[in-house]
Amino acid sequence: MVRNPSPEKRAAFLDTALRLFVARGVQNTSTAAIAQEAGTAAGTLFLYFATKQDLVDALVLKIGREQADYIETLLDPSHSAREAFFAIWEGSLRWFLKNMDAYHLIQQVRDSGLVSAAAVQESNQYFMYYYEAIQKGLAEGRIKAYPVEMIGGFLYQEIIAVMKLLAAQADLTRQDEIIRQGFDIFWDGIKAAGE
Image (cartoon, rainbow, N blue to C red; front, top):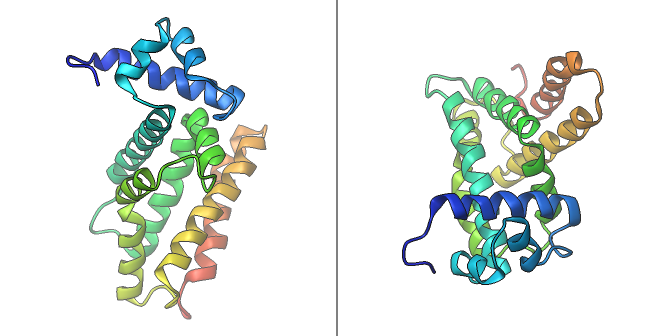
């Protein structure tokens, strides 16, 4: 690692890697291409990221942290479980819409084996609000007593399903409607009887 790392240079490597990974694929993008595109020698890149795996992991963690930071600004302890779920739902979709390269990279690497187990474990910590909303819903009796992992998995997968629809939707005026309809489908599937 660099003794006096430049945050700007590190950010430039991450931004360049994101752009190239999305355009060419992670496996088809060399570290030499990233360094060249960033305007440095390959050796300089390795001063910041010892391996391509380190670069991929750092990028995934950066994206996860930024997304989580945004969504956490939308959450309030006074929210009901439904309000918390909707804040996570809408916040995730809006963040992905504003960060399409991040969305495409996460879709490319998720469940691919391209992210180290340590990075997956660390990034899971950023998304504890998913599980806090689920626990709140269970404690309030507002959602069905399904396994926490199942609800979290469905929440994420349904967000991605709606994101795919939003990304393909040419009519931007329909975004709010699609986001709301997608949430209604999700909520109807987990809400407790009489909710």
